[in-house]
Image 1 (cartoon, helix red, strand yellow):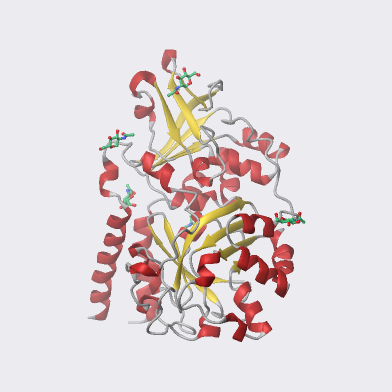
Image 2 (tube, helix red, strand yellow):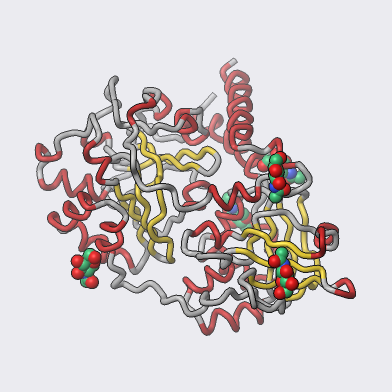
Amino acid sequence: MSALRILLLITSVLTVVTGHNITAILSAFPEYSDFNNYLSQTKLDDEINSRETITVLVLKNDVVSSLASKHPLSVVKSVLSLHILLDYYDNKKLHAISDGTTLSTTLYQTTGNSPGNVGFVNITDLKGGKVGFGSAVSGSKLDSSYTKSVKQIPYNISVLEIDSPIIAPGILTAPAPSADVNITGLLEKAGCKTFVKLITDTGVLKVFQGAAAKGLTVFAPSDEAFKAAGVPDLSKLTNAELVALLQYHALASYTPKGSLKTTKDPLSTLATNGAGKFDLSVETAGDSVTLDSGVGTSRLASTVLDSTPLCIFTVDNLLLPTELFGKAPSPAPGLSPETSPASAPSPVAFSPEPATAPSPFLSPPAPPTASPVGGPAPSDGPTADSQNSNASNGVNAVKSPSFVVALVFVSLSVMMSYVMS
Ligand SMILES: *[C@@H]1O[C@H](CO)[C@@H](O)[C@H](O)[C@H]1NC(C)=O
Ligand SMILES: *[C@@H]1O[C@H](CO)[C@@H](O)[C@H](O)[C@H]1NC(C)=O
Ligand SMILES: *[C@@H]1O[C@H](CO)[C@@H](O)[C@H](O)[C@H]1NC(C)=O
Ligand SMILES: *[C@@H]1O[C@H](CO)[C@@H](O)[C@H](O)[C@H]1NC(C)=O
Ligand SMILES: *[C@@H]1O[C@H](CO)[C@@H](O)[C@H](O)[C@H]1NC(C)=O
């Protein structure tokens, strides 16, 4: 039984768990091809596919193209995020809203840049069977109307058509991110001064700025991460090694959180200088994303900026590549995240990576005290998700992240024992 076969089996398990593929669903409807293309370009497709209990309000091609012709991709992404409801609504449920009106959380709410009610959509069952949608910001009109139901996979995903875009106040006028986004300013504000000093002193900042226009994702360790026990003495590194270490904290692509969650293969970093070198594995448990360098793991702590084509995250620990720091040292205090989901068996831990593969799942269990306290709080996800957690017909009760992890684990165990026998 080859590693490839095991991988194929595992992949099929993952596909079942992931459930839906919005790109495939919409490809059957040419009238939504523009909407579908923009979902792919903005990576919102990964966000949709990584979530359960979701409703996508699609718009026809002419509506999308008139919006997209007037606004930058970052604005299009914000508007489309407002059309992705973190709840399940089909035709029946739309017409059975209690009191005839409700607010739904949208994906836009999880981006951290949506003050007040901007990230919510008002759904109102109007007279004569019409259902109106609008921004939940008070004073907004309900001028988007439900036109038809497109596709349902109960209660995982529903696709409904509306006739015009839902626009929240201020969303269209947000400035587009430009090449002159002040990366260091943003990072300093986010509590990553040590990282800023290092990238500035070594010139790696220039590499980041050069890459930013085409697609860049930065994982900036917090100041606490540099002080944590077990962090190697960086002054012992040569300049070239320090540069490689810093470049290891970035990807040459726009990879927002939803895309990280759906990542199966190891990711190349800016330090990658050959197949399988200086790459990172991603592990997901519910809304929590953990990066695994092979030496240790680090939790994605907060989203500083998610604005196509630039994404900046803070992470709890330094990412230490095996190429510089060897395999997992047996005592690795401070190098593991505190959360138990990270040390739970993760599908990604089985990724093929024979070259460097110091089995990620061999990393030592995290000591609960090792985590840096006072790091930036996660700014995205949980709030919105929790508001949504019991919204639809009780089906969510069995879909908690731990249930899914357990399901994957049980499935994998069964598969493995079958394959091994
Ligand atoms: C809905 O999602 C769950 C979990 O992701 C999955 O097990 C189930 O098969 C999906 N249902 C359908 C009808 O695809
Ligand atoms: C989703 O479907 C599209 C089109 O059918 C396909 O190209 C893509 O690889 C699929 N994505 C996943 C994650 O399976
Ligand atoms: C939705 O908007 C309508 C019209 O502005 C308003 O009357 C209603 O109270 C709003 N619904 C909620 C749940 O706020
Ligand atoms: C970026 O922000 C930092 C800190 O806020 C500031 O010192 C610096 O001058 C800014 N750089 C530019 C180019 O605006
Ligand atoms: C979710 O469930 C809790 C307790 O079961 C309940 O208090 C709360 O009102 C529910 N929220 C929604 C939005 O249904």
